[in-house]
Length: 410
Image (cartoon, rainbow, N blue to C red; front, side, top):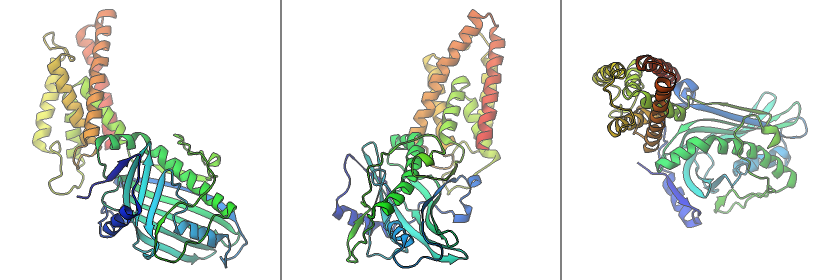
């Protein structure tokens, strides 16, 4: 397996990039789905944005008009803000099939992620002209999927529009904290990058910084200069008019694996065996195709039966006076392990367990254990609720949470 390459506070030299480009030309894709299979129901996030960049003369593109200039900028990846994503490629390599190294930057971290230009469009469709390309992620990328970049001219109005459309999901990560950071901040960076892409094309056209690169064979870095528009990492949707003039921006995200991880960790803090028992049952009811040898142990009938029996026994024992406190060391360790197992498994039930998601699930289990321990004390000692009744009330909350989690992953 090819690993994701990363560095702290520095990038890669031209010689290093050329060597890695040569190696990337033979890398396989890091996904197997066909483009038409990349749907939300199949677990793929759908993100797109589009904006009018300029308005030229009506009619098909001709000569050195605005369409030709923008086409050049798109071909050389000039829409990508290098403060977020810096592209490296060899301009002498034909566009179709060309390997590109995307240097992703975040808080001093640099990730070198390979892609390949997998498809081109250069055609006239009725009253419009379309030009662009699609990148496909390769093994060693922190994302997996395909992304289209299309420049479109409306012949009737002269309107020039730039359209970005991606189908993606998480790929490989070099470590657990990178995966966790991506889960927390990835969408902010992606959204900011979309906004800035449209802003850059508009500014590149306005300022005239669209010089053609020489035809000589050379490594190209997407360093086309624009003014210093600040990178604003908004968390909200629909802020395109404030940054880049984006008139349409949509995102359809698959069920949030991060929240599912936390949710099952919380459930484990409430009832040790309920979290893995429910997850095991769900994996049996709706199995997911997975490569041989990668089906998680929870997705077995025997495991499901054992966990169900343990969960039911725990529900009954919880109401007895001799059951030890959930925050006693042995009990707490069990809940931590349960939260780690269920939390990591629900994030990627048919892939290698993520250490980062396991730690997140364990942390949620610890927090939940102490929180519900204090609530149980408050109910029985301060409010005078019998322990059995308080336990049944907690059972009801656990069942409601479990049903909600199953609905999210179902």
